[in-house]
Amino acid sequence: MKKKAALHNLGCKVNAYETEVMEQHLKEAGYEIVPFEPGADVYVINTCTVTNIADRKSRQMLHRARKMNPDAIVVAAGCYVQASQEAAAVDPAIDIVLGNNRKNELVEVIRQFEEKKQAEKSIDVTDLTHSREYESTFLASTQEHTRAYLKVQDGCNQFCSYCIIPYARGRVRSRNLQETVEEVRSLAASGCQEIVLTGIHLSSYGVDTGSSLLELIQAVHEVDGISRIRLGSLEPGIITEEFASKLAALPKMCPHFHLSLQSGCDATLKRMNRKYTAAQYAEKCRILRSVFNRPALTTDVIVGFPGETEEEFAATVEFLKEISFYETHIFKYSRRQGTRAAVMPDQIPEQIKAKRSEILISLGDANRKKFEESWQGQQAEVLMEEKITLNGKDYYTGYTKEYLKTVIPADQEYTNIKVTGSIGQEVAPHIYLIKKI
Image 1 (cartoon, one colour):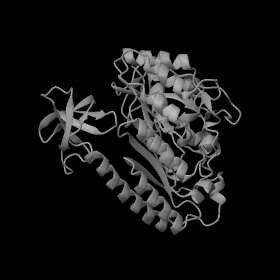
Image 2 (cartoon, helix red, strand yellow; image 1 turned 45 degrees about the vertical axis):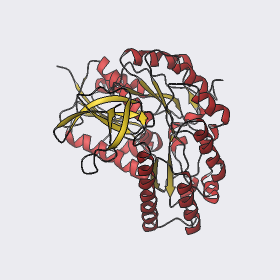
Image 3 (cartoon, one colour; image 1 turned 120 degrees about the vertical axis):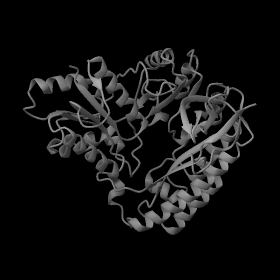
Image 4 (cartoon, one colour; image 1 turned 90 degrees about the vertical axis):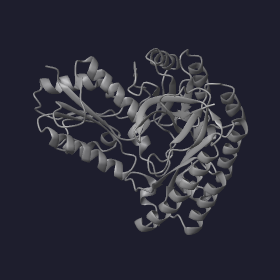
């Protein structure tokens, strides 16, 4: 009888890619992949540590796995255990601690643990402080079928004052360009049409290998079968007139850019150790909007950073109104032990963080609605992904290049379509109806 393995992913798209790779390795080793429910022989939780809440969720999932089957092998992989090795080493819910850059070893580590008859906890964590080794991975196919997230870079050299990730992921390491292109070809052969290039600090791709993100994008663009290329989060500094113009010259490039902001106030940005001013960031948005037709610009903002005054917060509000992003992801500042921000004076009370967060979420919702409504009556290209049922009717769902979610009646063709209006908030918010032109 096949052994059963269940996996659960927490955190970013890089983690999601690595979880798929670990699942693939387990399948190749003869495991049956089952839902994250009682009955599995092995539970693998790919953890996150970006915030204190992420740490707590990671611990909760590990303990849930232990309760679901006390006799199972519970594997804690990834960022939480990389950054909190001592806590993981004494956690009774965990059998195997598998750090970053060691996820390819999952099957072998489980085998060795079983041979020891679970006599002692297995800990496989490498000090990534000085490592320049990129963990080679290869995903033959993806569960999403149409879209694949592809990790091409790991680590970060930025050391923003609030962020623990450089300690959990190590320094910048880039994947070999040709190896990446080979994986894209494999994914295209399996039916994937859209590639999303991701990394911990994607803008740094190639700085350690003599390549560049632009060179990688251009190489992926040449792969037959791939019709779209989308990018993960970018640092504003990578956006130049030349970079944007060369991207705009690539027909497969999606005009959808996530530029990390964090604050619209220069004083706050300086305390965060971000490498730009609000005016410089605004110029990057102007460049993208000048070379792409109505690109979707999205961002992240941290509210309640230590020392953030009412005036500084007001500057961020005005900046968000000025830029008018398609989507704005709001995060309340989370104190992370081991970072400079954790010991800064003037920590902001939780109730003030919550109030400011609500204001920015409301503003973000208004900006998103304005962007979506601007597409009504406009022609758009949609890549259909799955069939769903709404109000007893069958539809196909998919996304425009700008990542506007759309639906079309299943009995219609779906080329040369026009965005005509919303399905309705009570049924499916932010899903827009499209029709054949």
